[in-house]
Length: 554
View (tube, rainbow, N blue to C red):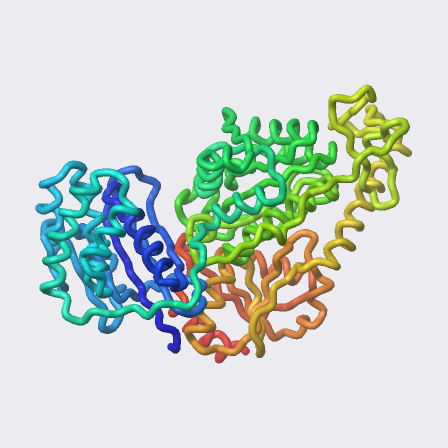
């Protein structure tokens, strides 16, 4: 492997500060101008269970975390048992000797932590002290990191960190000096990128009811809404979320909804309402392993087919999925623009792995387009004017003219109708809008292609990052094809891929992308690599599986 990847894992119980330690480590690597990928793993518990954060860093582009770590710090026996096989060759395991037994470097972390307030939470600081020793950071720099990252009990945190630092410094012999990079990047989570992308293209209102893994977007807007000029609303349930967003769009407000699969089930009637009244609303779905409650805090791509045809009846739907955190920023902005251009609901489909992981990214808000709808220019206002492209002009209150959005089938004025000719006319109008949308997408960037060589690898969403890192790690020359838009499906971009010379990598158990490629583009897939245990692909394991499949199947 050519890249100088360094990986750090810290594990412990919820409430011990492991996630915070991972964030601090990621920020420290970012300050070194190194590229970073951080992944957080946690159960649906406030206290207890097993949490861990893994941070991989390199001076080169990095798209994924690695589960073979140069440094593993564990705070209890369960974490030791789970991560003892994650120590890389020549890597180091450091464990809390008060709570665990095993091979590696033992430090009495808990007994030292008991001398301070919030003894459980302060144990996470030990992970940063050990990391500082491992990468050759002196105490003065460690103090600066703690002052910057830990706002409370700074003196206690520093004193505790020094004790752990001294203990680790005596035992860690093979230290690693990390090479600095050339350019400093922003370290963004997918949820932050989604929020910033929506803000960049004029979002006014965000409606959400807490449901992992979409909740971090709600938290982002709650903490930054005032600065961004965005009003954040948490109604009583998901049904109210969707209906309020549609109502807000009636007034001209740019609205967005956040939910997960279970919450989106409750929004089906409202989604159809948006299709019938032609409301421009963007829905964000953070997939979780299902069905039903599923595994709320884990990752999967099992809701692809469900997301393609939500709601009853025939009307234009837009579904797209970002393949990186950087792309999440631009795609969110693009979708918000599209819903206002074509006055139809859209879905931004993602997963916990993208939404709650963070990586180095460069974003430029000036490259996003501000959503500018077609507006009424005078004369009698017809909300559903039958236009050539199917897109009718908008008019917002207050107005002296009647503005009527109607969930019932309607005429051009928006008045209810059951006349067969008018019913067919409005169907045809919405179909023309669908055709206009497809023609518009044909001029856009709807598919990503990476690399060269055959066979091809099809993938989508956050799995794209895992595939790219696996190919890099395994030195595998293949072309990665990632459809960004999933509905309308960009079949015009896939004409050259109909030979039976492709594999698919996706995170579900039934091969949903495979089904979509076969149905819409007539592409027969030679083999599939599936993962559906709630955990993202590890690039080392994935590289091995790709080589095995290509050798045997292709």
